[in-house]
Image (cartoon, rainbow, N blue to C red; front, top):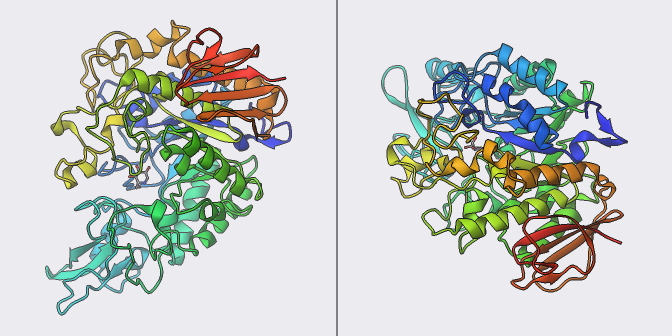
Length: 554
Ligand code: NOJ
């Protein structure tokens, strides 16, 4: 790559981006935690895998109350990961390998240890410092009731009140502040000109250093109705933003003013600097608002990620996505896993294959063999669809969710705040296995205890062992990405369904490329088509169930 555009198509419309969760990628200094030197050492692995770029989950200084999404300094690097010089080296070395770099920016909240927030606490009610956050007096006689009924995502109680009361300097109970996520993540006030200004500077800081793009965390959260009216959750006080319509603290129309402003900042730079929105909203139409030509370039496709392994559900979500995005000229961004989701091998090996909430389904029995077949087939579906795609680290290895982490190592706030009822997201954040047949599998130097323990059974899942096996999940990804780059049909945004039996997804892309996904339970005859790649062996020339084939179409 290296150029801003391949032909006349901007790079981000078709890019495959690999999500790096830096704490779990590679540890170079033996503290059991991943770091940027570890990432640098494996950039070549990523270039060889065939992805076009990486998205690095938050790398900022943070007390890690929410895995780094609680930031204390947006202009620096967590000492555990390294220094700004290491970040510059990542950017430079990635560029030299033709890899784009997208970083995470978290605009809805800071850490409660961010100097802006500690200053706000110290300065007291009515101060300019407090105006950066959403502080309000409580309701009730002594102000001891939260200002309204808004709920938070995880904590102090999961899906309890989104408000926390502070103690003022004189020691008396004081105002309340809003936290849409954990109590350690106070929400910023995006009506404040100071907040707007400070984030312009943050964007410029990173664009100046050369990042190609920014993933915008929890984009719909930043706007709040100014009257702070109570929300109508329809009696279901759960953080189900895919279902929220007209909610006063989620996907409020004013958020778009901010993103228009951000787009102008990005446009003032050379090269294609892009935004990708994390926007879990109620419809493809609401999502398309984030993708207007003067806002974000792309957005993760959550309905696709959460869909069941079921042909009709997948077809519905693919159609809904394309119907909404094609007319407005925005690319689809297909994604099936992330640092927030149960790993695909485990989810697809369960009876319930859809995912409705980030922590769902845990404890349900999973068949890893079935899950692996399906995850391989799904990866080939994802990489055959028109638009961009994301691969979460470890999915290319077919790693399962580690759902038996000992209680005492779990760090996700969700775990403690549900009294252990929900194990949270650590099971998909276990350090990657690179080499060898026992922990730490080359993630850390031998003998080091990793921040989350790796299973003893991952020897056959290491990068080293899979590189030597042409049938491995890693080899499948490498071959698929190679074909994706080379096949002319996949260089277009064309897409057309073919007639197919029930339970089969069958589509063509441009000239000569056809993808067949069998979720039907019966083998599918591929005729005498030339198979370019299949996610599993064909049986008597037929495509077995839970298998995808890419074939040369006539
Ligand atoms: C979405 C991130 O992906 C998740 O990990 C985080 O907990 C929330 N946003 C809050 O920042």
